[in-house]
Image (cartoon, rainbow, N blue to C red):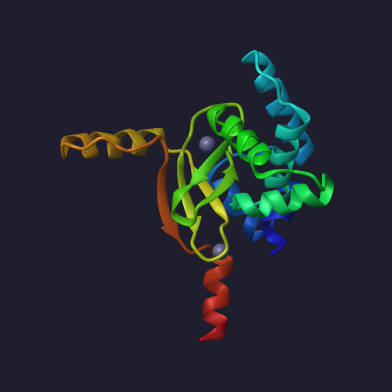
Length: 177
Ligand SMILES: [Zn+2]
Ligand SMILES: [Zn+2]
């Protein structure tokens, strides 16, 4: 589906774009996002190496959660010799830098919608197509974590992930019924 990608590149309002703005901010273009990520890494004294940058670029271009092996396939089209560890190491770096999220429910990776603010939100993940919205509601997040702790639990990770079905997939489902 082209919608998610178009909503990143174009500023014209579309349903997908409006939806994107409801939940999270997104840099205007992949180039802008890469420049932000670059500056962010430099500030932290780390390096967005060409390989790390390429993996981030592929994730930005995909516009949705993408599995590691798909990223590896794409890398191999650009650099035929790419070995799995190189892609996994790049993903590990991007994860630890907070530039991408691991999406557990579909075992994939997605670009953080908040590349530099570092205020990770709650991810809503379409279980059909892998599109991800990141909800920035710090109070809601805190309240949820407080309730989890009240119940005597501690969350297993940073990510709070909600399983969903995006508007496009809902429409496709409605059309096929
Ligand atoms: Zn995030
Ligand atoms: Zn979907």
